[in-house]
Image 1 (cartoon, rainbow, N blue to C red):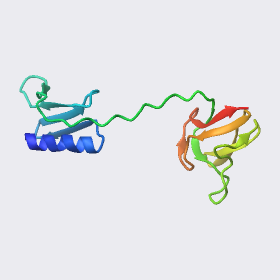
Image 2 (cartoon, helix red, strand yellow; image 1 turned 45 degrees about the vertical axis):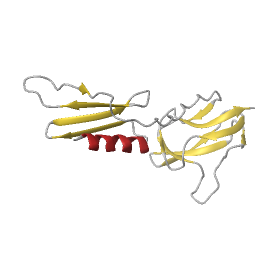
Image 3 (cartoon, rainbow, N blue to C red; image 1 turned 90 degrees about the vertical axis):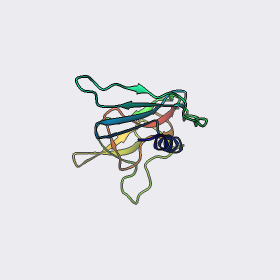
Image 4 (cartoon, helix red, strand yellow; image 1 turned 30 degrees about the horizontal axis):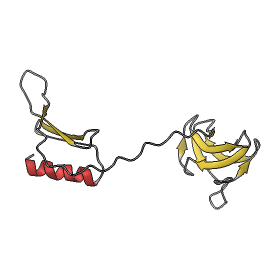
Length: 157
């Protein structure tokens, strides 16, 4: 890979918000990785007989444009969640053409059904188990869920 190709790869990485690129051909390997400062770090590996491959940093003489601001890390939600009691498939409504059990802003009681989780061909109604208002729906209908995965955020009443 020549310097023009490396510059083109770095440009593509920037445009597509990629943080790492690796390419290997005929025993030669190149890895481009954006550091925490957003500047690319280029490493090459060439085959060396009787020893392990050596990573050689390329000087930072490559022109770099200002790095895009990384997306903000999500702030941990402090509201309690309604979690999945089992592994299965999450369904927000009792039937594909039916309205969802709850939506954002819905007030629920401990006995309110909030969704269905299908496990081993059995449809299990999941209850809120607390009173409050649904503030966030964390799972898309029809998607698999794991045991303990948060399904909804709820503001306690």
